[in-house]
Length: 384
Image (cartoon, rainbow, N blue to C red; front, side, top):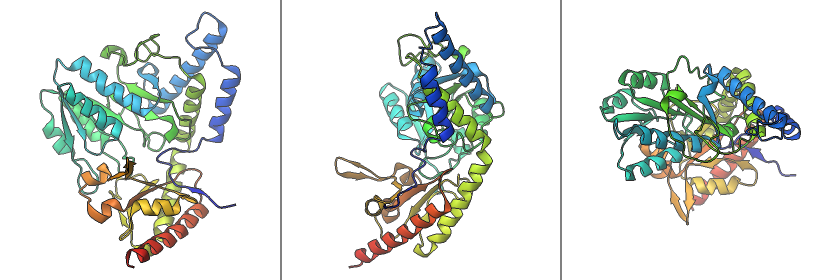
């Protein structure tokens, strides 16, 4: 059987065995509608959901009633941007974000521009870091929200959300953090970091897809309007029957990630060091800060090698990713790397390798061997 190595953990992680057990147990025994509290079956489901909410609160050191469940970070990000814009537009119609955010933030901001909002897109430096001084200088009396991701999904670069939270708090501006890539990998203490909103997706920390969450500081006082109307679930902010089994799975995965946060980080660092050592003869160029970064994401460009060609060459045995996306036959370069000032061959040759808890050194060694083979072959073809 052909060996297959998965190095795309930043896109989605495998489901932890403990998480699968918890979810299957829930599916088997807690099947009532949590909104049907007229009977014990619904009450049991509702109690399980509130226990999960308490578990989230414990991990983040926050109040349980300030969390709502969503289908993932995309929905949570949309909710924050649109609801805050709608609720506070009388105070101002200016929002600050960055040019390296996830598309769900950038596309929502583009939509808000059509509604008369002014969006400032901060550019990072060449290492992918947002200048907090520049951010502060762009805050005006019209600014109502700053939205900056914690860890970039393409480069792994970490932004200084602690400092940004201080700045926004001083100016009385809401601060939203897309923490999809950092939750479960970095400790986030919401009592110490005064962010207003924080969104996350369970499938980024060894749980199932289709479930995520949103933290809203002082939720009850915000009086935000829902983006999904219906039965009034989640304190009236997000209608729809809650998926009890997915929520239990997410809470289980988050607890597990929190317990293993130091071990997982150290494991990823060992894997990264081994990978870079193995492929050093290829002289790949690292993209993004190597000082402020998570070790589980490595973004590399190889001279004289197209990223798309490399992915095709490896697709049967090593799963990696690229910042490029094929849309109707056209290749779109990574907006993240382009915002960092990376252009030309380096831009179109960038690939992302990401690993995690279940990646082994043998996996890295095999992937390194295949990378060396295919990069060498593609370079030879380029010189024919």
